[in-house]
Image (cartoon, rainbow, N blue to C red):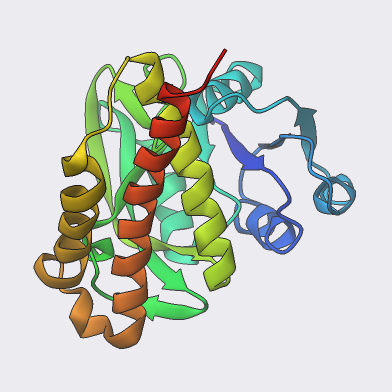
Amino acid sequence: MTKITAIIPTLNEEIHIADAIASVSFADEIIVIDSFSTDKTIEIAEKLNVKIIKRKFDDFSSQKNFAIDQAKHTWIYILDADERVTPEVEVEIIEAVKNPKDFVGFYVRRTFYFCDRKVNYSGFQRDKVIRLFLKEKCKYNGLVHEKISANGKLGFFKHKIDHFSYRSYDHYISKMNHYAAIRAKELHEKKRKVNIYHVMIKPAARFFIHYVIRLGFLDGFTGFLVANTQAYGVLTRYIKLWFLNNKKH
């Protein structure tokens, strides 16, 4: 029988790690790749019979690709610590590995939660990610919002996993700042410059997309918060890029 390695990247995930590991208990091997957490993430994981790898974080793709290289098995399931595999998706994963039907990977859709409130719209209604794949056929690319490049056909699971991405508004803001810093560095290395369009038009456009076009207003005040914070992330990205471009050496 073909076996599965589940990989969970972590950094200070003591709130999530036990439930995340439990949700992939069907896997034959579980690897936690940790970016030197300073909370109890590792202490908790050590008690749950998983393999722990500590590696300094450079970017999301490199971190995940490194962990994939350490996996014993050919089928990989990547789980962010704030995600939970539902029982319905677990059945689909096991069936897909038994009978992949020429697929090298599978998309799964996610049910998004913001501060424990289910978000039905705001752009997340179409949220999907590749989570199960063959290690020799797929590889991560991109510094932030990393994506998988697949050499072959991709399938879809019918059911959704749960995604508890932001446990508080402060946590949401901190993640936006983290993503903005990585993206700004990427743009700086490409020698991109900042202009008025980036700081005035792009943030407003991002708000409009999430709140109006992607129906965020149907999520009430939560939808407004999501759209506003997405716009903040765009603005912060270009502010950070401006500072990088104008840094005196």
